[in-house]
Image 1 (cartoon, rainbow, N blue to C red):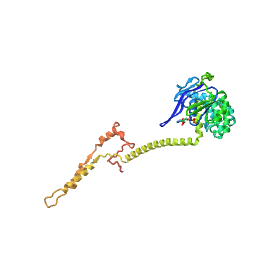
Image 2 (cartoon, protein in one colour):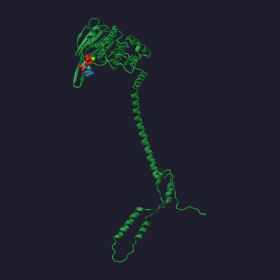
Image 3 (cartoon, protein in one colour):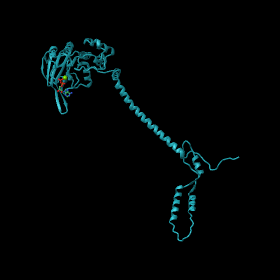
Image 4 (tube, rainbow, N blue to C red):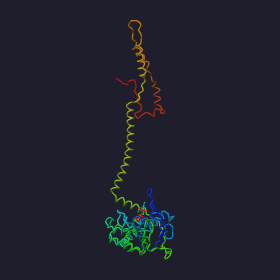
Length: 397
Ligand code: ADP
Ligand code: MG
C-alpha cells in the first residue's frame, strides 16, 4: 500500500516561498484508478513527483508497503523508481534520436535484462498499445497520440506496481484522449494508476476515485481509503529493491549512439580539441628548434673569432694612453728662450711601444694545453687547437 502522511513541500525562489503541498494525507489501494483533479498551480505535479520519488518532501512521510522512506538512501530511491513506478508525462519525454523500440528498451537496460529478453518484452508491450508495426520508427515520425502510447508502453514494460501519469492527454485532441484513457483504464485493472488531469469529464468517465486539490490541499475525495475496509491489504511482492545498473558495454554503446546522432557536433568538437593539442605540440617543437638554432649560431660565431695567443703581444690600450699623455704634456711645455728645440715625441712613442711589448711563455702554455687534466679541455671546441709556427718551413731546392 502507498500512503502519504502529512506531506509538506515548498519551493523557495529568491525571497518568495511557495507552499505547493500543505499537510497532504492520502492512502491508495493497491488496485484502483485515481484521478487527481485541480486547477493549474494547485500542486498536482508536485504531489505526483513526490509519490514517484522524483522529488523529495520537506516534512511528513511517504510510506511504501508499510515502510517509511524518511531514511531512504539514493540507491533505494533508484530501485523504487526503476522497479515499482512507471511514469507517463504530458510531453511524452521520448528520446528523439532512438527508435521506438530502443526507447522502450531503455528502462530495462537499467534493470540488467538481457538484450534478447528486452526485445521480446518491448515488442509485446508495443503490441498491447497497438503500435507493433511502428517499432522501428523514430518518435518524430509519430502522431501525438501514438507518442503517448509509446510512453505508456515504456512505463509498463518493467511491469511496475504503480503507474503515474501527469496530464497524459493534456496535449491531445478529444478522440485521441479517449484512446489513451481506454489504455490507462485497461492498465488500471491490475495495478494502481494515479493520473493528474484538469479535465473533469475524463476523470468522471474513467477513474474509480477522484481526489480534488486546491492550493496544495485536498478538498474532496470520492472514494477515501481509511483505516477500515481493506486497509490491511498489501502488495504481493513488497517493494522490490533490485539494484539498478548498466553493463559497461551497454553504456558504451549508448554513448556511441548518442555521438553518432550529432555527427556535425562530434566532428567539430574533435576538430577543436585537436587544434588545441596540435597547437601545444607546435609551440613546444618551435621553441626547441629555436633553442638549437641559437646554440648553432653561437658556435659558428665563436669559430670565426677564435682566441689567438701569439709569442709576443703588445698592450695596445696602455700604449695609446701613454702616447696621448706624452703628446698632451708637450703642449704645456713653457719655452724660455726664443730658439729651436728638438721634438723627442717620436722617440718617446717608440720607447713606449717597446715598453709595452711582452713575451708569452708559450712553452709552458703548450705543456698546459697538452696536459689531459687541464681545465681548458672542457672549453675547447670541435675545431680544437691550431698551431702556427714563426719559423717558416719552406724548403727550396
Ligand atoms: P500543477 O501541476 O497543479 O499545475 P505544480 O505542482 O506544478 O502545479 O505547482 C504547484 C506550485 O508550486 C505552483 O505555484 C508552482 O509555481 C510551484 N512550483 C512547482 N515547481 C516549482 C519549482 N521547481 N520551483 C518553484 N516553484 C515551483
Ligand atoms: Mg502540472
